[in-house]
Image 1 (cartoon, rainbow, N blue to C red):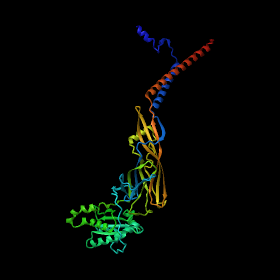
Image 2 (image 1 turned 90 degrees about the vertical axis):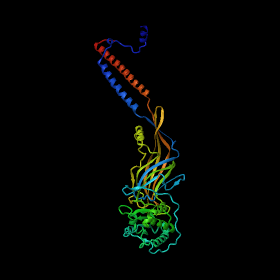
Image 3 (image 1 turned 180 degrees about the vertical axis):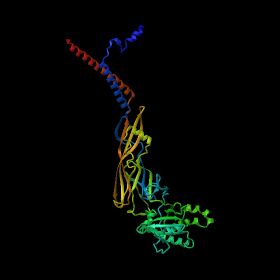
Image 4 (image 1 turned 135 degrees about the horizontal axis):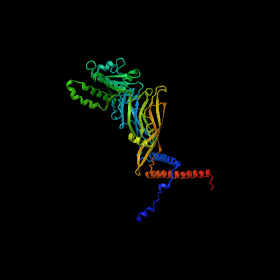
Length: 481
């Protein structure tokens, strides 16, 4: 009993008997107002606790991905053939890589950007193409000159029709001409068109037969195409390109290998694999359409540089006035791809993040010839790295690492071969966004401060109001103090 009384003596909240307290209408109203104020302030504090707070700073780039940067892209060129489409990279340090193929894929497309077949394989990079040293002599009628009106007739007549699409002004066409004419004469003598009729070598002047060359998607000169008669269910012709040596001996050897599979029926099965293996490195399927979709990625150094896409060949000439590098960009981004789930988590912190991650996506850059010929389309990209760091359980965790960029594009005439060029320049600084989580104990402390503070202030106001009312009543009764 004594210990219980001692324990009660430390009670900070001594109770006043209810009979000694007095309720008032003003006190009730003030209590309601105080309760509403507590609820409102508690809601504001809870919302502040649940709201993500971040701090942004600009620091020197301390990237963990080394000195190289990955560029992902998916670009469609309605008027650039996959046969000659080349992806090149260079930078201010002197790096110059041409015709990248290891991480690049190409698909032939039509003018509506729809794919026309499976992936177009460029094949292995061959040695420098050898040309003959023959003197350009008159070949007479050994090499047939085809026109638009008789091309289909010849292509249906001969099981194999090999055509040299050339331009008289082309350096490489003129180097090929003597070897081609001599090879045509040899093949004509060995496989007489009237007695044998299995193969014919012909030529087409693309300066005179422009529509015929465009129909066969000829963009570089000379282009040697191999047509096979009725190779599919519709009686159409397979279309292959020849990329081998251009001296007479190599041409004749290749033509004989093409004829061998259609020799006597009893010999066909034994020969069908050998000729194919002998020529597979010098001929590949020709593009089935005049456009190309190029997708993949390249790795570049983190210095100012260029990613360029154009027509390129070490043994063909191009008419720059006919080249059109118009393109549609489906995707273009820097750095590793950010997963949608990770991006949604980042947007929880910063709703505006990711807006400049792929600024060029879905944009079209078309030259409608109103600017003129020889048009290069250039994109100037300024790239800044952004890092978002979140803190969970007193530890830092890198949530996202992305490269945002600004883009400015222009169409300009050039005296050189038209190119689609992407100039990129990386900032030496990076943006660091850090999440600043709030302590739960700080939240509880603030809630207690709100409740206690409102309760105390309401008590003071009630006391002032109550004493003021009593004083006014005494004044009314005429009592002096």
